[in-house]
Image (tube, rainbow, N blue to C red; front, side, top):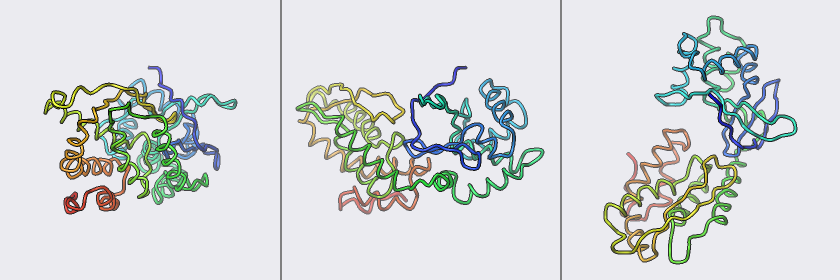
Length: 302
């Protein structure tokens, strides 16, 4: 199976204590395959062979692979495991055109294995696991690379402004990105990094499109149209085609937005992002109060 490549350039990457680590534009951190091997106290060939056998489906048939699979599901809060333990970053650099990046949650799962479950546990794995578990691997890598979390918020504002500059609704129409800008700005103002993994305009668009279709609103306001929407270059998704709705429907949308989406759909969206680890649980009241109309402030997630 050919490994997919992502044309992303890490905002920071270097070796610290011979461990290759880096940070992606969306704030996610990673260890290189060889860096992960050193992090776990084993030789690079062991981790490289594990990754190769994993893609073939062979590693998961053995006790080590089965235990790592279980740990990956626990660390990612998922009932499935990825087909690959790493992602190839096609950085087109003069020094190294491809980086084999192991995402933070998978790196922690494999470190957990070598620290606690391997037939012979590794002292380095135990030590690094304790350091990373204490802070969280993301914050651990931030500290080792002298990267401030404030950079993520600054980057979020830049990406948000870039989306605004890149996208303008046609005359006579509105889009869900237009209408979601207060929500996106609220998230960033409250310290939530917004990147290609948090796009409330997508959630808003799905919900409104369903309501539009279920209530045959095109008969009343006219047909919606498809337009191109541009993402910043660092986004992993392809540029989509999105719906643009006639301005005549704007009043109906605002009523639905305040009476249905904000009190019902938006809290569910925030709660889902909490479960994915994108938003902290304690941020929920602030995020809801920031966008809910005063009459709806008491309708919060229980």
